[in-house]
Length: 178
Image 1 (spheres, helix red, strand yellow):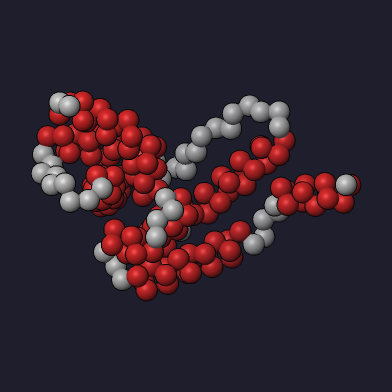
Image 2: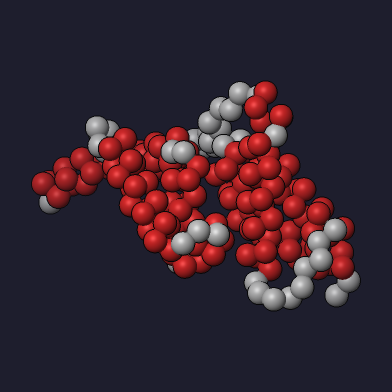
C-alpha cells in the first residue's frame, strides 16, 4: 500500500473522531476542520510515527495538541466563538425532536464547562475511554481524572437541575395511560 493510500485509509477511518475531539476544544466547526486537516498534513509530511501503539491514539494526541495551540493563538483570541450545532433536521416524530433538543442542551452545558472539566467528560462518556487511558492521554494522574470527572458531573447536575425534561414527562404520561 502506497503512502498516499495509507493516508486515504487514515482519513476515512479517523476523521470523524478527530473532528469531534477538535470541536470539543475549539467549540467551532470550521476551526475543528482546519485543525484536523492540519493534523493529517503534518502526519503525512512531517510526522516520524514509529509503530508503537494504536495510530488512532497518536492522531488524537496530535489533534489535542494542535487544538490547544489554536486556543493559545492570536486567531482564537480575536474571533468571537459561537456555539454551532447542526440545525435540526425536519422530522415528524415529536419524541426525536425533544430528545435532540435535550441532547443539544446537554452538549451546550458540557461545552460551557472550563476545559479542565470538559476534557475528562468528553473522553469518558463520548469516546468511552477508560480512566487510565484518559490519564495517559492528558498526562495527569488517574486520581486527578476521577476528581475532575466527579466535579464536572456535579457542575453539569447543578446547571441542568432546573431544566424541564420533556422526554421524562412524556414517558410518565405513556406509563399512566397504559
